[in-house]
Length: 170
Image (cartoon, rainbow, N blue to C red):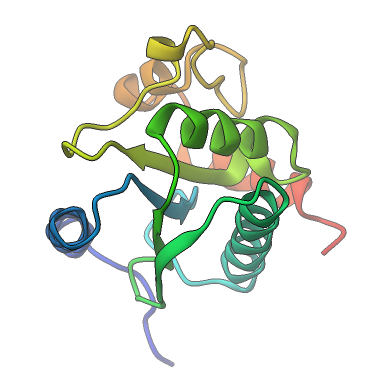
């Protein structure tokens, strides 16, 4: 049986590779980026559920961009052991793009499980708070998601059970 679990070192290496790819795309295209991944706590990042969530997130993002007549200058999706990734270079301003992505995260059936980061033309992440929007809430307790993640307020098992509950119909 093949072990699909990943190590922390593999996750960090993948994050570094994604950051390098983002920097390259920002040099190649004078436009903000969307970096899309799926929330997938624990050592196994490639599951049936994570694959379904990734597909749903890509569809939702592409629909919103098309519905708002926002051109995609470049798109790349990658299936990796450390989790699927999508990068989009998009022909609009970063604030509009962040509002659009935040809207998907806030309203889509699975949006809480999407991680749609927007990176400005200068390489800085665009936060919800700089647009006057509230930060994301914890999947379990409703408090600030970043604070819960940093403090490890909830176990991987608790988070996985909640994701299973949210996606049980799929």
